[in-house]
Length: 192
Image 1 (cartoon, rainbow, N blue to C red):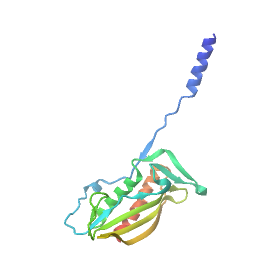
Image 2 (cartoon, rainbow, N blue to C red):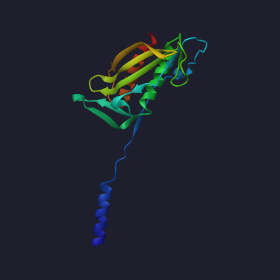
Image 3 (cartoon, one colour):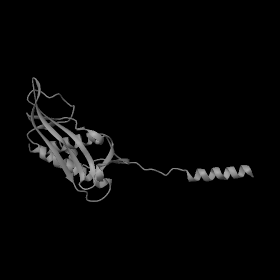
Image 4 (tube, rainbow, N blue to C red):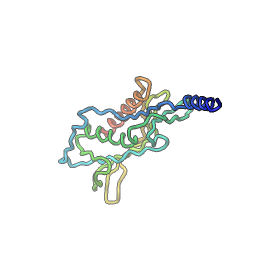
């Protein structure tokens, strides 16, 4: 009888303590089919090298970040970028500039070493988060350099803060708003 009681207690504890099934979700920017069809015209004589986007602070990780009331930060437990966001942002900017800038050949990060006279774009992101009031919030600074014999010369720089309201609630809407915010920055850089 005692063994039966112990067995029933163990079965009850085991049934009550079973973990619930946690589903991880991964997110990325959506690209239209024609985005992948662009080819570089290597006959252009001007080159723009896109450096790897750098992300500083709490957003420099794969989980999605939210800024809550009172300036507290929430790091999502089960919602992640499909790859580190610096790669997603760099790829999106490279694609966007390749489509929008006709005078330059856009060179992706790390593909070649800039030669004298060629241009380099560097973007530093200090905030990449969902914001409880603003929706998507991306802040940072961009730099345009020209390569020369002494290294590189800074030609232009600007701080940026871009927000896009969410059209729906949830992480899917946040990623769409992040993509829209990032495309706004890319559009601005395309005309500089």
